[in-house]
Image (cartoon, rainbow, N blue to C red):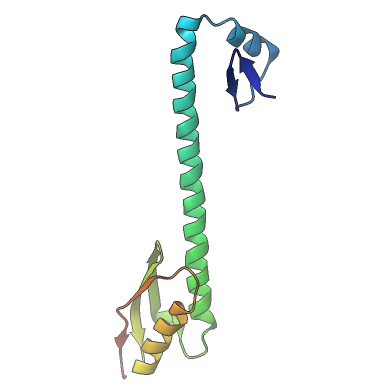
Length: 126
């Protein structure tokens, strides 16, 4: 249900008939500050929702990177770590050859959403 007060519409549901009646009877001098406060609360809720959505997308991005590295048959992922944020991935850890270092990097470049890979993998011949 959407409450209407004069020409103002509220997109948030109002819980009861009593709340709607009180809102309709609000004097004009109090209506403007109330609307400002309501708009501020709505923007705070939206920013919280946006942050939650961004966190969820970041988790999905990290999971895609992790899955791609695990599924590469040329890599032993127990010595690999990565940091991912906003399309950038930093690879860290040790691999046993230059080929594996290059394969880890190329695996990530094939994923959608990766803009930059910083390859800090160390080659350990032993």
